[in-house]
Length: 363
Image (cartoon, rainbow, N blue to C red):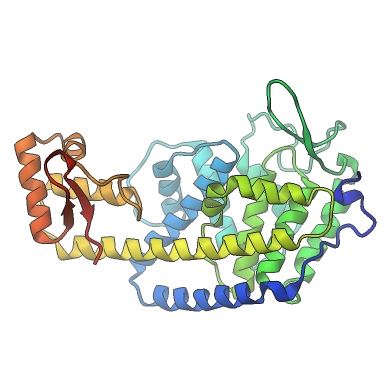
């Protein structure tokens, strides 16, 4: 059977626009709601949210590809890019390059897509000493570009992309489509098809997944005419098995209805989670403002560590043992500190004796 790019109607992926109308309405409604919320908060809180979302997107997009970045180093690099005061962290070239790339996509979302822009993104992903031969340019190798399973006992070719000699022409057509559909396609439909289309060409030697997901962020931002603050990759990483399965379903067909619905649902889920993160960060700011001067250094350290776990907090809640490990306090001091935090309303307590657990009180 031919691959999708070998079909006569390539690259005209098909899906029913009307099936995404409810998703589109929900997306735009949530964008309006989040914009109103973001316009009402302090600059510090807004900047904090931008740093959290961009770093989460970079971390999770890399994680999908099996690469793990350091959160603190990445956030520090993003803060420095925006001129936000940040504690100096050990410089890491990998995180610094990812930060530069994320900030570039965020700041220049409105610019038309070009070959040069994509080449620059690719060069920012990989340093000059990496394993990539075609750094900052489309692949040129003569062997087939194949997506192959990594099973020890057997191998399976899941997909084979167009040969390298066709990539420039394919990407010229892709860029023309990308720029010409900005106002003629539903936002979520355009995002879904752009990602599928780009991954089908697989134009680079490596980094196609990360760049393909950045294109989604660019499309969503262009659709609402402002940078969207949605960590789509975080949701895709959670649904990675589904994500790859839906992509695989389109390897030999241009029928993309199931893929478009899956991708639109993923964006809406990511949007909801991003709003939950914003609410969480606002609650954090309000808590530390309310308890300013009332907490000792151990209590502040423990609360910051709990907030660092994100909206879900510690799995199973914070125990006295956790508190001791974080603060190096004695058991008696830990018991007293935790009781004070409950009394002040910073934490809630559940369970008794060794089953006692503590949770952030968010409202």
